[in-house]
Image (cartoon, rainbow, N blue to C red; front, top):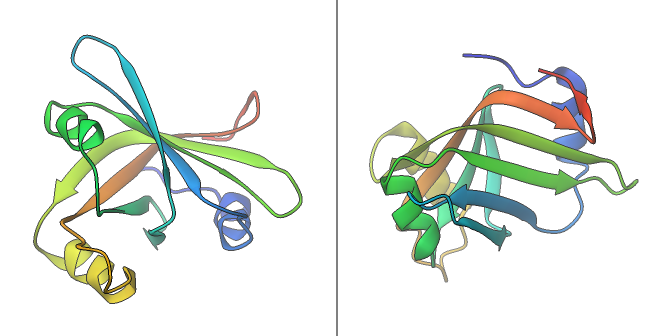
Length: 125
């Protein structure tokens, strides 16, 4: 699996605000949500906790790929695109349970595996 470039991994630690997770329904209808319960699991995986997903969950379970968009404190934008795994057990799920706030249900760990990485119109991976 491709590795998120080092400069993007560093940018992730300086992100500002929520990320945007985008998916698509089976008929191609796009869906985007703000997500604040997020973490980088490893050098190829961004994880978003499913606390209150509805359309997003349905899209993922139907096989949608996804995109995670984030901005840094200095205004740089990065987008990580790839396949999504919806995990309700295992190491990624267990890790999500350690950082997801207890006040949220943490129904699943949504793991976006990097296949492409962009900074604006420049493809980095």
